[in-house]
Image 1 (cartoon, rainbow, N blue to C red):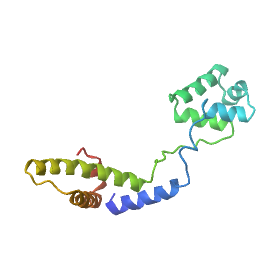
Image 2 (cartoon, rainbow, N blue to C red; image 1 turned 90 degrees about the vertical axis):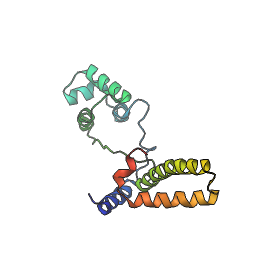
Image 3 (cartoon, one colour; image 1 turned 90 degrees about the horizontal axis):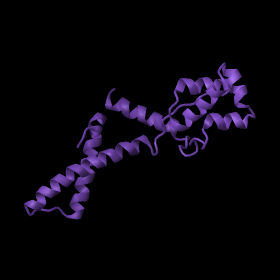
Length: 154
């Protein structure tokens, strides 16, 4: 994918995810399966019957969800048995553009630290203003390059 296509895809995803608040979608303390099942007034036995599994299997599904040891397939089948759909998403804490900029800043800071250290040893330390300007220049240079380079170790 070209850098322009990557940027367009990132903006499209940001737009699609902007209405999804990750904290609002946090799993209830006993898991989504149990929360929805109980909100529907459905017993574990009734859910088991609808899924064609045993009652202990439903308890295992609910426990596996809470511990993160379940599969999407199992959650999808369980949701369908409760006349629900499984919605799966990875939601960024900030915008994707902000994540990219933060990563570029980390790389720039790492590079600046090495440069500034060398210059201090040579008694040519940069002023705070020069450091700030150089940091921003480096960030822009990094952002102008390939996004894949962002994730290489500095």
